[in-house]
Amino acid sequence: MSTGLRVVLIIFAILWFILVSILLKKNKLPIKYSMFWYAFILVIVLLGVFPDFLTLICSFFRFKSVANLVIGLFITMLMFITLILTAIVSYQKKQIKQLIQEVSLIKSKIEK
Amino acid sequence: MKKQEKIIFIIPAFNEEENILNTYKSIKDYNKKNKIDYDVIVINDGSTDNTQSILEKNKIPHINLIRNLGIGGAVQTGFKYAIENNYDVAIQFDGDGQHDIKYAKEILKPILDKKANMVIGSRFIDKNSKGFKSSFARRIGIKLISLVIKLKTGKKIYDTTSGFRAIDKNILKIFSENYPTEYPEPISSVTIINKGLEVDEVPVEMKERGFGKSSIRTWKNLYYMFNVIISILIIGKRVKK
Image (tube, rainbow over all chains, first blue to last red; front, side, top):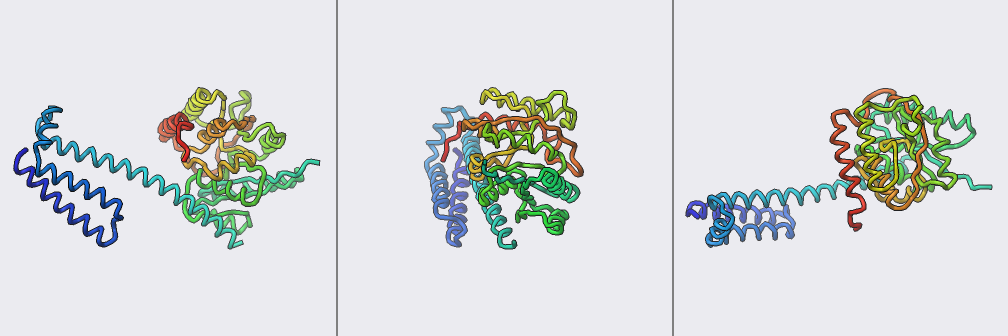
C-alpha cells in the first residue's frame, strides 16, 4: 500500500474522530452509536498503521490494488448502514402511525 | 331472541368532498328504508380539500386524522374506534361512491349467521353480473394475486383488492392491533386465513368512482402487484416479536 494512501487513511480517521467527538459532546449522537463509529475509526487507523493485513487480503482476492479494496470495504459498510437505517426508519414510521391514530382518536373524543 | 349486533360502517376518506356526503346519505337512507341502525364513522385522512368542513356542517360522525396516514392507517383507526366503542361488526366502505349500500345485507349475513369471520364483497364471483370491474390490466393483477393466495393458503379469493368487506369482533381485535399499512386488502386476507379464521366472499356490483382519482394509478399497477405477491409469500414466515 502506498504511503500516500496510508496518510490519507489516518488523516481521515483523525478528522472523523474529531467530528464524532464533537457530536457526542453536543449530545447530538447517542453513546451507543458513537461506539460503532469509534470502532470504525479504530479499524481505519489499524489499517493505516499495519497495511500488511490489507495487502494480504488483496492478493488473496486478487484485487488490482489496495485502494480498490479500501473503497470496496467502505461501500459495503455504507450499504450496510443504509439497510439498518431503512429498518430503523420503518420502525419509527410504525410508531408515528400509532401516535397519529391515538392522538386523533383522543382529539375527536375531547371535541365531542 | 338474539342479541342485537352493533354494526358500524368505517369510511376512509381522503379528499372526497364531492362524494362523501352522498355516500353518507345513502347509508342513512338505507337505514330508514330497512328500519335498521347502522352507525357510520368517517375517517378523514388529513384531507386538504373541503372534506372536513362538509363532515362538520352535515354533522357526519367522523375522526380527523391529524396527519395523512394512507388507506391502511385510516381504516385501522376506524377499527380501533370500533373496538373502543364495543362494536360487534365493522364494514369497510369506500367514500368515493364505488360501493353500493344495497349489498350490505348480503355481506353481513355470513357474519351474523356465524359462518364467517370476514366477508369480502366480490366483483368476480357472479360472472354474469354487470357493474364496474376495473380496467383490464388491473383485473389481470387481481387474478395473479388471487392465484398466489390460492397457492399459499389453498383458499381461493376472487376479488383480492376489494375494499368492501365486513369483519367480526375477533378480526376487529386482530386488525386494531396490527394492520398492514401498504396493500392492506390482499395481505390482511392472507393473515386471517393463516390464523384459521373463515373468509367468505359474496357477489356485489360496484360502480365507477363518483369523482376524483383512485388511489391506485395505472402505472403503479405492476409495482403494486409485485409488492403484494412478495408480501403474501413472506407472511407467516415472519417471527412474531
